[in-house]
Length: 489
Image (cartoon, rainbow, N blue to C red; front, side):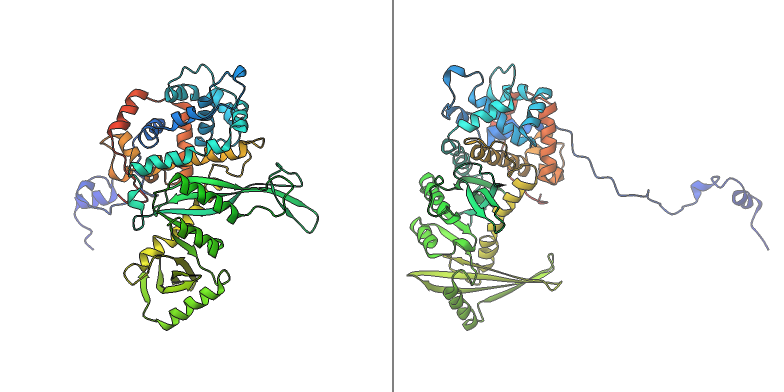
């Protein structure tokens, strides 16, 4: 058999690389995943003064205006330094006061705080000195910082695109921040007695958070649920705290258009009367056991009007949503409406969500009312979950004496807001310059989770110093930061 020419045989039997340039073999990729493009290198610490100057320019001054609760004859550290140290502890998500004290000794916090406050700071105060101030500071004064920060964001129109029919969404909900057994924290503790003789002493708080569809949340104020000393007839509760908080919010923002969001606990006559009195719109979770007669009326109207339904297939989530509504429900002299969504997943799981509202639903707006209105109440629960389980340690007792518990709660709310403004704006792209590609336009696209971002920010604040505070403030006054959420460009 002919095996080819002599030259061909030499290629076959000898060095196979000879003549290989004329042979086109298969293109083989290296094993493993493709490498992700690395984001540009920046000093993440520089983002803090820019965000403070751009979104919250009055924060250091608000700290200075707070009353001085300490003995004036024994002052060494200024209260604004101590409060900024407390804020830095929350920004870096220190696991304890002791841990933050160790970080202050090793890190560059003194240089950075000196630049932020414009003060000469030869040394930082101990974590115990910070705690001492917070035990003495009146919490009713401290909490006033939150509405002032929110007021600046509202007036700058940074949040206008998140309104629902000109209303800001304000979610009310309660959460627990402290619980211990057989040992009261203070005389205002709530109590729960068990059948085995144990007694739990705990503290809860009702918060009012302005929520947005993409996930940005900020607190407008809060009210602790607590007993009035140990000689009480009936314990304080979430609804009583809500009425106190709602009155405070109305006093702070008398002209603000608000749509209140609440769970089924708030679906009652007294709450609806108060919301109507304040001229607030509302979405309240609607369950049959909360107002049985009204729920039965709504179900009867749904059955009598089968055309009040809209079916939408969501292919991305692999589910079918059936929206329905019942209008003109009469309840104690008021005209209310109910909106529903029945969700059926391709896996067979079902879920029904129902909301009582004063917005009149129809075929054109029912989807928006449900998804951009009622369902946004879950954002406040997501916020509590982040603050408890993603580094903020909301349930950790940073301070248990005096007013420390309430004041640390305020500090955590401020820190979380600053993190969100850094994470969800296009600050990262502005810091990186024009060379930064579009898919690195915000920190959330680079770091993907708030825990990853806060860890990187803590390292930057600990080991780096601000580039040039005057230049950074000048940049903040000239640029326009915009919100960038999720994977949107």
